[in-house]
Image (cartoon, rainbow, N blue to C red; front, side, top):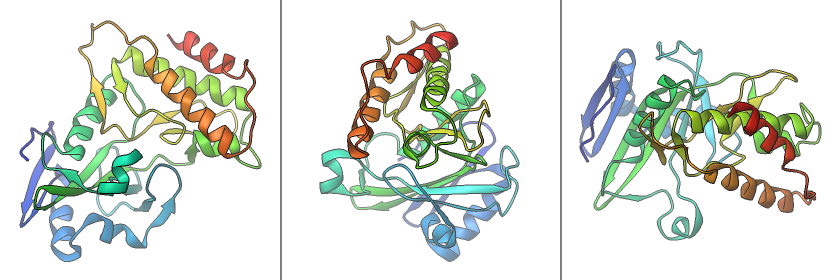
Length: 256
């Protein structure tokens, strides 16, 4: 279960728990796990946030994090697809644990200009051949998921503008050679106010960061995002015409 950390982060090891924290938050993490047992227990009184496979919770930041955000978000890692029916939130203790992979990918992505929240801390709870894990990141204020924004009763912006912004974010990931293997409409964050420019990406635990001069990927993230939007459209009984993807592609080409 050992994994190499990036600069400015310190490891933590307690009985049946492994983790890490941004250096300034390391004493807080050690005390929190000693008294609360898990990060999800610490976050249980926080504000639920929608999106993704599990409910993340937001809480005031107890100490200074990497970017000085006033709020943090804690989320428990959970599987998707058929594996979730069998394993739920458990992962096999083989290879690098999800939080350590996410820290490495997030730090590399941020260094290359991708807008993704800074990782603060994580904990991995060992149980036999399995582990469970929680991650704490800084909270991006005044955002909602692309899925929420597109299908809300009162959208914050026309769908075409939202898709253009998502396309530009896709292009920024490709330029940075950051391959997000689970990119979908719930892990793209869009501004909650009209005409705000910044889009963010989250859930980088399955990302692959390629060498800076590697050939760019040939559109797999865009196809993955389009498939997720089609599924959401069916769920919300919204019809997507054949030209619905034109704004997404235009934003992607503008940002490429």
